[in-house]
Length: 84
Image (cartoon, rainbow, N blue to C red; front, side):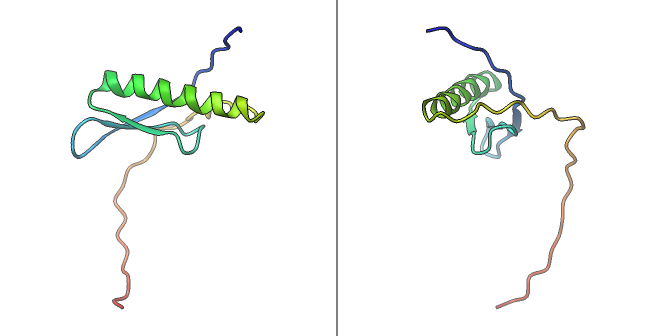
């Protein structure tokens, strides 16, 4: 059976305990991690492949990549919660 290739943007966020947490904005729920950037990349490819194989098996459409037109903004937000 022939294979089709797909490309997705992934985000690597440094984890407090070391390594990286990886998410894929176009594929909600795809989250993985790796101890090194190289391992995180490999884990991301595996997680995406498994996700797409599951969609195909269930007859679901394969989503297109979401182009990130701008860099994400990172900021701290403080909120007050009334004491119970």
